[in-house]
Length: 474
Image (cartoon, rainbow, N blue to C red; front, side, top):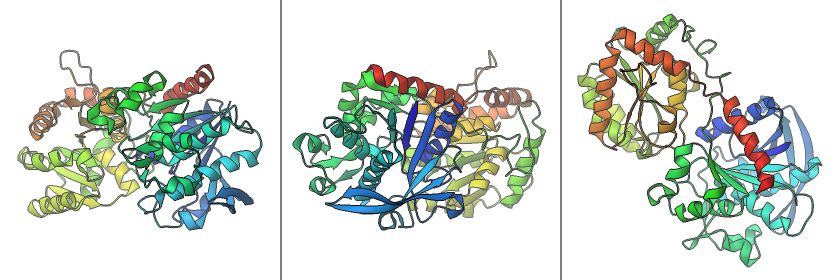
C-alpha cells in the first residue's frame, strides 16, 4: 500500500507543537509496518540544509493563481521514511512556520504543489493522509478532481485533526483567486461568513481521524466542537480516535543521549543522578529528597496555566521545587518570572524551548503537571510516564485515555487525574501525589507502572494501517 503523508511540520524539519512530533514519527512507524509511505513537507528557511540528500526536481510545475509556477523539490531520509520538501522561498522563507497574514495562500500553494508532485512521481498513492487545516486544501482539491477522472481518481483521503481550535480561517473572497471556481467547491469552505480550510477538509475527506478516543467524542459536542461539532456528529460514522504514540528511539531513558545517567523500570538508580543534574543546571539547592514538580508547555490558558498560576503558592507551601519550560502569553511569562523572583531557591524557569533540556526535565522531575482545559492527545504525559515522572493531569482528551488514576487498593495506576477544571481540584491532586511521594515503595510502584506502558508508535501505526485499508470499503 502506498501512502502520501502531508504535513506542514514534522521533526526534524520543523516543529511548533505536537503535530511536528507526530508527523516526524508516524511515517517512520508506518514504513516499519511495511507501508510504502512518503512524507511531503514545505522546505522552510529554518530547516537544516544538512538534512537534505539531493534535489530530485528543479522544475516541478504548479498551476497557481492563473500561472504555471516552477519550484524545486528536495529529498531527505532524515525522518526514517522518504521525505519530499517543496522549495518555494516566496512562501516558506519567513523565519517561522505559521503566523503570517497570507497563511492560507502559503498552505494552499503547498497543497497544490504536493498534488502536482504526486503526479510527477508516477504511481498514484492509494491514500493521501493530510494533517490539520493546512492540508484541508489538498483533500478538497483531490475530492473535486475525482469527478474529472485522471491520475488521482482512485486515491482515497484521510484527514487527521490534531487540534480542532485551529481551523485555517480566511477571507472567502480569496477562494476564487486560490483556484476554487465552482459553487459546490466553494461552499464546503464556508463557515459563518468566512472560509475554513479545515471545514473543507472535514467535509470532503473519505475518513477523519483524531488523536485520542475521548477527544473524538468531545469534539462532537459544543464545548469543544469550536463551531464544527454539527459536522463531526454528521460524519461520526467516518470519525475515529487513535491515540498518538511515543518515538522510543528518541524518548527512552535507557539510551537518551541528553541525560546525565540512564535508567529503566528495572533499575531506577540513574533517575536520582538525573535529578541532581537538573537541580545543578538551574542552580537550585541539591536537596534530592525534596520533590520536583515540573511543566513543559506553551504558556496559554488552554494548557491550564491559569490553574497553575492560582495553585503556585500551594505548591511552594507544600515544600516542592517548581521548574517550568515554555513561552507564550506575556501574562504567564510575567507570572513565572515573578514567582522565580519571589522564591529563587525553589523556582526555576526557562523561557522558550530547548529540546535537550526538555529531556532533562522529564528525567529529573518527580511530578509532571498537565492540567489542560482541553487536550486532543498530549505527548508529555506519555514522555513523563516513560521517564518515571508521575503525571498529574486533568481527565480530558488524550490525558484521560493515557493516564490511569493510581488505586492504592490494587497498586494499579500510572498517575493522578482530576475532573473539575479548578485550581482547587488541581491542588488537591498535587497534595495526593505528594502523599504517595513520601512513601517510597508505593511511589516506585507508580513509576514502574507508567514506565511499562506500551505507548509506542508501532501500536498506533497498526491502527492507521487498518484505517487505510478500510477507506476502500466506505
